[in-house]
Length: 209
Image (cartoon, rainbow, N blue to C red; front, side):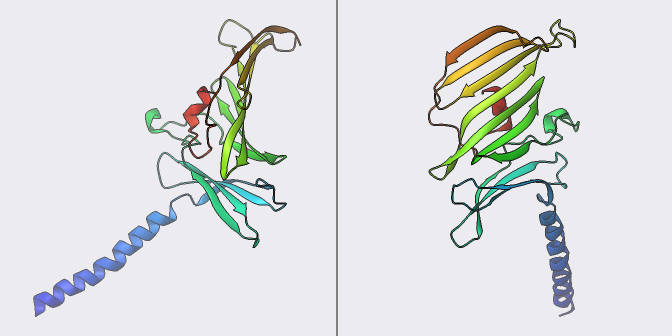
């Protein structure tokens, strides 16, 4: 009988400790909000919500994008949740070092969701349009500089890349900073079907578009 009571007591003690540990872990999952934006994304005249939250418990500091769409009853419903679109602040492959980039900004212009982010040697903006229940990538724009390729700060070569995924036209324009003179324009057609969806978009895909 004493052994049974002893085991019962240990079991009861274990339950609250275990639940307490699980509760701490759950509180650490994407609780720190770093971005918030509102605007009409589904063309219903009501405000939708975009949030970016960080997991401060995970050493890599991953980030989660969520999009909430307004409903006829006035409530917001989760439409998209992704941890792939934003690179963790301290990627595993960096051995604990900061990735060197700001957390992307999200904003809404004329019903289009735009993501501005830093990248190696420049920055990029990706435009997603809500259609048939999905946010599809319709336009990508990048600015990169070539300061490490023999150019000084005074005459840095910039390349602007504009990719209209609807028409498939991808245009690269080279220009020397401050000159206002276009050095070279390159155009090609790249058809991508189906259009990439935001829930499938990975931060590494920025090199593709």
